[in-house]
Image (tube, rainbow, N blue to C red; front, side, top):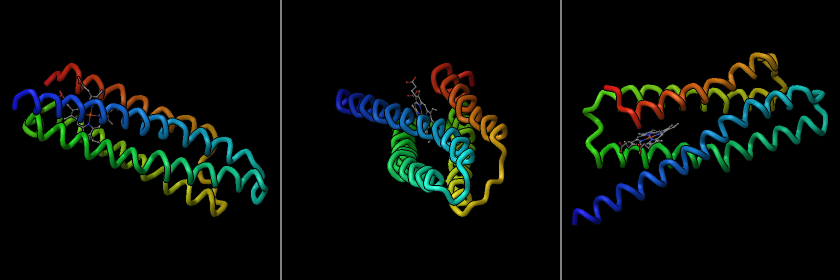
Length: 147
Ligand code: HEM
């Protein structure tokens, strides 16, 4: 029985890390797409191509990945009793912020498709640092568990 539980935990963790990679890859790509998109003239064929690429990235990669990361992460948390641990609360806060960032990008893609270009290329490039910084802190929290 112990073997089954520890194997389940390892498979859940492997799945979790796989989908974390997909989610992060998508979060890194989308603001880059926005930068190139905003360089295309409004209403041009290229404009439409970028809108299509962004929609595909959001629907095919980002949405399934965020769902899988959350489900597998919560299953892991339940299996190791993480809900009472400090590192997990800090991680949860950061992951909630990262999920909010995902929501913000998704809303920005819709605005861009309507022709609203609210941020400059420079601001979008700066925004692109958010998931990298968040991922680095999250990995330290789950691996080192400093508190
Ligand atoms: C979406 C909500 C998330 C929840 C509920 C969650 C929860 C968990 C839990 C409970 C573990 C097991 C820790 C252990 O066994 O000691 C874990 C492992 C891990 N998580 Fe998450 N996680 C989430 C998102 C993320 C994100 C966004 C990242 C990275 C950016 C991440 C990276 C990792 C890594 C690398 C491990 C493996 C740590 C190890 O084995 O030492 N997780 N996660």
